Structures are given as structure tokens and as C-alpha cells.
Amino acid sequence: MASEFDTTLKNIAQKIAKYVEDVAELSVETRSVEVGANTGFADARPVARTLIKLDGDCEAVVPIRSAAEGQAVDGGLFEVHERNVAAAIEYRAKLLNAMLSALKR
Image (cartoon, rainbow, N blue to C red; front, side, top):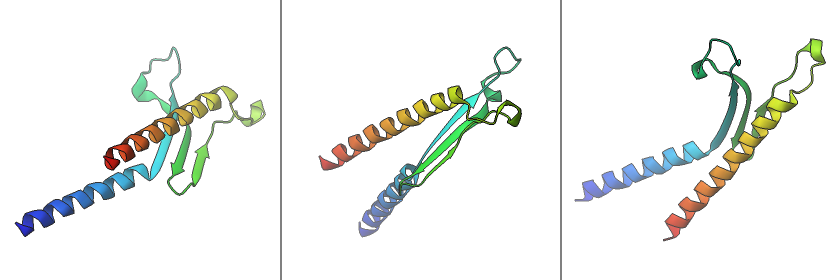
């Protein structure tokens, strides 16, 4: 009986550790494909990426225009990516709140 209890506790601890690992980082990647080209979604290329860590560290890679175009941030793509990041943060917050509420029951 004690062996089954120990195994159950170990399994629970492993699931909690996996959950903490999964929520420790929030990664948002925005991809694009060329319209009209003979490509599909599988050919999408990353154009922006943001990584937010549980400890507050944040890393962002944003699209810029080429040097010939003045090497400025591509505003349209950056706006889309910002909306994706905001939606991901909002979703993560709702998910964490729901899980905390479930634990309190």
C-alpha cells in the first residue's frame, strides 16, 4: 500500500514539475507566407518572436526593413506581432487564474 502511495506522490510531483516547466516560458512566434506564391502554411517563415520568462526576462526579435529601405522596424508586421503577444499574455493569465481557482476548491 505504501508503495502505491509513494508512486502516486512521485507521479503527481512529476506532473507538477512538468507544468511549472511549461508555464515558465511564454513564446509567441509570428510567421508569414508570400501571397500568390506556390506556397502553403507549411512554408511559413518566422518574422517576429517574443519569449517571456516567468522571472520577467523578455526577449524579442522584430522585423526590420532592409538597409536599402532605411532599416526601420516593419510597422505592420510588428503591430500584428504585438497583438499576438498581448493575446497570448491575456490567455496565459486566464489559464493561470482558472487553475488557481481550481486548486482553491
